[in-house]
Amino acid sequence: MKPTILTCAVTGTFPTRAHNPALPVTPQEIADSCIGAAKAGAAICHIHVRDPQSGVPSMKLEYYREVMQRIRASGTDLIINLTTGPGGRFIPSDDEPAKAAPGTLLTTPEIRTEHVVELKPEICTLDLNTMWFGGGAVINTPRNLRVMAERMYAAGVKPEIEAFDTGDLVMAQDLIADGTIKLPALFQIVTGVKYGMPSTPETMQLAKSLLPKDCEWAAFGAGRHAFTMLAQAFILGGHCRIGMEDTVHLSRGVPAPSNAALVEKGVTIIENLGGKIATVEEARSILQLKPRKA
Image (cartoon, rainbow, N blue to C red):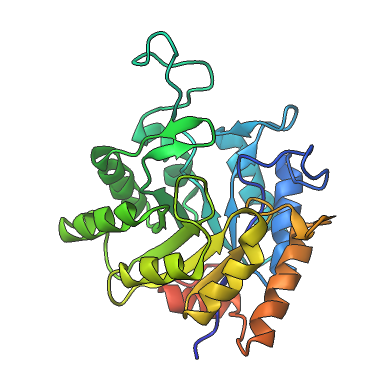
C-alpha cells in the first residue's frame, strides 16, 4: 500500500467566522494555518484568500503572494495548491436573467489564472463543474478550461482536476482526448455540495470508476460527512482531504479549534485503518512533481 497524501483546505469561500471564529482570514492567519497543518501531517495545503478586513473571498494577487512568501519564509516544506475557482460565478438578475446581478464574479480565464502564472505554485485547481452552487451558477466552459489549463502547464504547474458530478468526469475524458489535460493527471472527487454528488459510498465508487486509468486521485466530503468521506476515500485507494473549507467542526457540535486539529484527526483515522501518511517528499514523488529548490 502506497502512502496516503493528506491535503488540508484551510479556508475556502463559504465558511465565515460566524460559523467558526477560528477560521483563518488574513494572509498571515492563512499562512500560519498552512504551517500548522503541515506540522500535523498534511503534505499539501489548498489555499483560497480573503479580504483581511471583511473576510469575503478575494482574488487579489497580493494576498496570494503574501501567503506564499510567509510559508516559504518559515522554512516549512509544503506543497502549495492555489485555487482558480473564484471568478466562475454568475448570478442572474430576476427581471433580466441575461444580465448579472450583484455578487457576480464571472471573469476571464486569464484573470482567474493570473496568480498561478505569476507565483507558480506546484499545484493549482482546475474546476470542471458548471452547476448551481451556493446561490449562483458556476460556469466553466470547455473553451475557458482549455485556456486555463494551457496557462497552468506553461507555468509548470500541475492542475488538480476538480470533479463535482459525474458529467465533469465525462468532460475530463474529452479534455484528455484532445490534449487539454495531460496524463498522468491528478483528480479530486468532490462530494457533499448540494446539487452535486452526494456524500455516499456508492457515489464515490461510481466516481472512481469513471476516472481515467493511471491517474492519482483524492476525494472529500463537504459538511457533516467530511470525516466519513475521508475514510471512504482511503478505503477505495484514494488520497484524502480535510480542512475548514470542508468542515468547521471537529465532531458534531464541536467547533474545530484549528486546521491542524482537523488534520490530526484525519491522520488518526487513516493510521487506524492501516494506512501511512505520505511525507512531502513522498507526495512529490507520487504526483511526479519536481523536487522544490531550497
